[in-house]
Amino acid sequence: MRTTNRILSAVLGLVLIAVGLTVAIEMALVAAGRSPVVLPLDRWFRSLRSVSLDDSRFVAVAAGVGLIGLVLLVAELRPWPPSQVQANAAAGAPMSIARRSVQRRVETAAATAGVSRARSEVRGKPDHWRLKLRAVGWPDRREAVTEAVRAELDRLYAPSDVPIDVTLRRPQGRVR
Image (cartoon, rainbow, N blue to C red; front, side, top):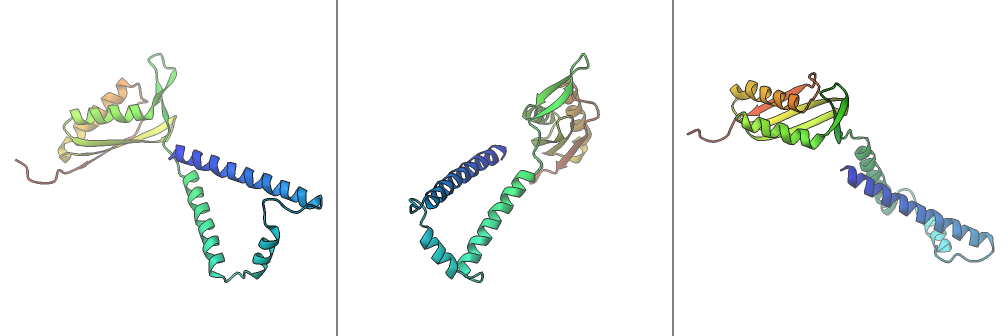
């Protein structure tokens, strides 16, 4: 979603620049006594004078613009997971690890501990992060999964105070 936000912001910025330059050039032409080339200012002025605030087209356009603005605002204010998280190297110096690598390694470790369909999520800030793991397995495997995940985090030199939340969902269907 980060990439989508950046692309949408760039497109919006380019559109605003193009519209602003067009309006500036048109206003310079009008100030010089010439007629506008691109913008039909006379037709716009006449149509805007005839539109009232209770016109359904005006309300629909205003609601659409407001909704688009609200969606963009929510998308920008949403806290995104960090792309890298901090770990401690053997010598004690901080180093960064890719968040997705941590997630993949933790999911693999959980699968070796006897659960299936493991999905992990790293959230928080790069220097203070937490791990959430969801998988399908029997509740009595929770401790073994937590130990396997903690051991994998230790191999990655993750800080020992990283909170781990393991949620196991019971398998569906018949047990044979």
